[in-house]
Image (cartoon, rainbow, N blue to C red; front, side, top):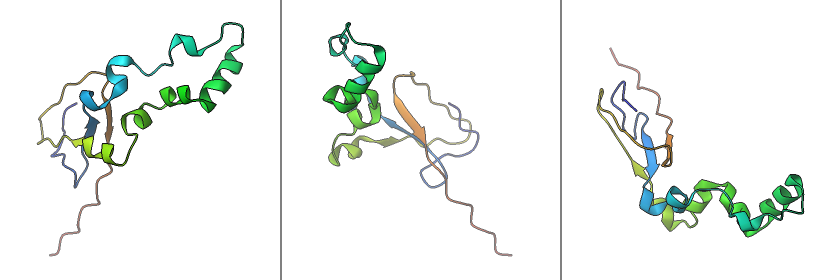
Length: 106
């Protein structure tokens, strides 16, 4: 990721949940193999997983942020124009909406 302009929390920024706070980073986000029953159809297994505790595997963000306190683990990654960040596809990341620029007073 390369910042085409200065990127900070006020004008738009990249946010991540660091690996040590994301249980799915190393474990993956798919339900364990044992949670599906081979004798059932795919739709029957999917219905069960969405209503049981294995359903939490389907939402990586909920697994990484299970409590209000865990939101403290979110990190902003501000960058100056032209700076870059390299990360793996496994890291939970998203961008923020920037505030509209203030109009200039002449």
